[in-house]
Length: 512
Image (cartoon, rainbow, N blue to C red; front, side, top):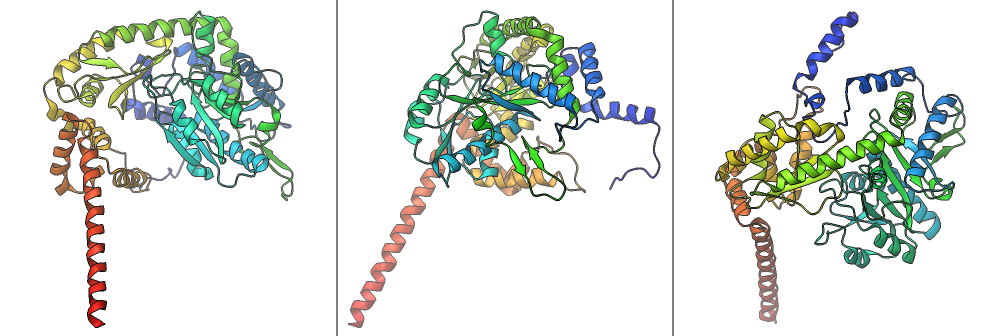
């Protein structure tokens, strides 16, 4: 077990070791990543780092102490409100990330529902494509989630939302765009439902909040997604994404102060003094606020518009290039910078195997489930690597074509297992155990290419692999098989119960 050194080490040695540790990290400075990182260039990064450093030790815990940080926050919130067509009645704060912003909205509307409507068993309605932060928030704050499907256009199914609304509903959620496929939900329709039933409507614009408005200003035609929609009561937007600020910095905005108050925490009776906090964090990192403010000042409105134009151009090049690969198709009609694509024939070209080949070529991309796919979040910085990416993609497709067995190798095996075994409870528990163990002091890193850890039973691997391959060839086979087994089990139990009851009755008759 490693511990801290007995005596301090020279700064230079430590910095060299820090550089060495990153050797196996994604090559984001070469724009080889298609998620996680929003990187412009070294000069800009150094500028953000210097801005961050000036306030690195400053603490936003007490806004009356570090007035500079409250000024940064006020400016950031005001700019974001203007960007998303809020008015002077808007209220909000800076948070550490999109997940915090989303979870705060869950907490806020849970408390709003209890105070305003007397709701003690709150429920929320989200699309199956909603970010996992919403499910996390629901689990943390005891809010029941109704997950509805998407329609033929991959937007939240409004008819399904209508059917799920009830007296306990405290929140309707739309995404602009949703992360998996880059689709903007029908926010106008959600707003109408919110007004009709007096239910808050939150727009998760963590990805699009600092991109979509500038796309519009650059001439793009987009559906309404912000406070212009009557019924929208709050919006979350990540500044450290397309705002190109330092990690981690997000913003959550409410239509008015009355709603925002339900987010705040106040404890007036603490021996340490009066305590009030607008978000989850107590200590709030001043450096992140300073760097976000600096990013906005450095880019300016016109700078963000130019970046949005380049992002749009890069996204179009990517879509054209993917469509040119005859074995692939784009999922839905993404309108901004996120693209998801899949194989037209998963048995002949396994998309996860394509992802493994791409990873071998040095690209870092995300895998998707339901349906199986690959994912790219495009920025203005990807301009010079798109041709290389598309060339490698064509080669990867050619390398896996006609080799369905590759679905059971590398990371493809892990994602194929998760995506095609319908026994989600078993998979969840196994993933939980594997993931949690990686945080045990004696354990190392997670090996996502080791699909055997998901089954937890080497003897079952061959059977599971056969099931997965059959499901890839005949989508829905595994689900139907398990449903059939469950049904047969229920019928068997019913027949057994009937038999036992009949035997008891006969026994009673004989006694008479």
